[in-house]
Image 1 (spheres, rainbow, N blue to C red):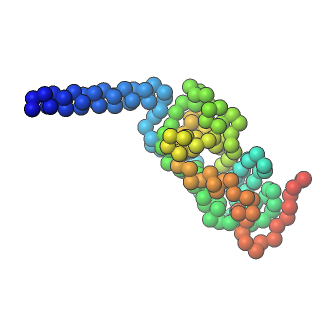
Image 2: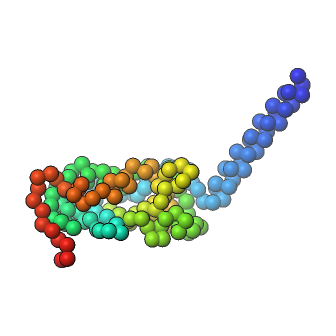
Image 3: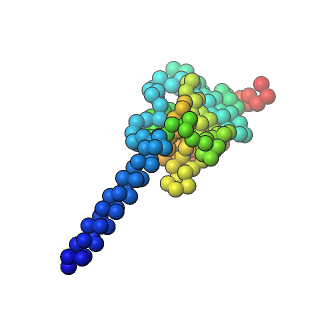
Length: 174
């Protein structure tokens, strides 16, 4: 019986040392505690949004209480889509790293998969982390991990952002 207790204590000590090693390695890589929001922007203060994708660019501007898509078409934008885009500013960060210490090409950020500007704040989107299915995003010199629920919205066709039944003006080639 004494040997079993000794064995259990040895296993517990090994597990504690392993956890300490993992914690030390994460801190050495520059990971901070998962806390905070993606940007310091107030969603209500956002007046301009641009989504740059490999195939096109979408541009939105706020005029009073309404949003207007100005590129690739001119049309009133869906209010719920604009709320989702503005909420990007305050998404919860699930992990954060010093981007200067990392190879951003391994995160799909050179070049980025797509980029979003909220007013003047640029957010570059990379690939999914294969280990936890979180999306790499670059804001300034910080690489963040976020839940991947906004990327499908950002990847939607331009028509998905336009209010149904609205007339549009095509701005391609202007």
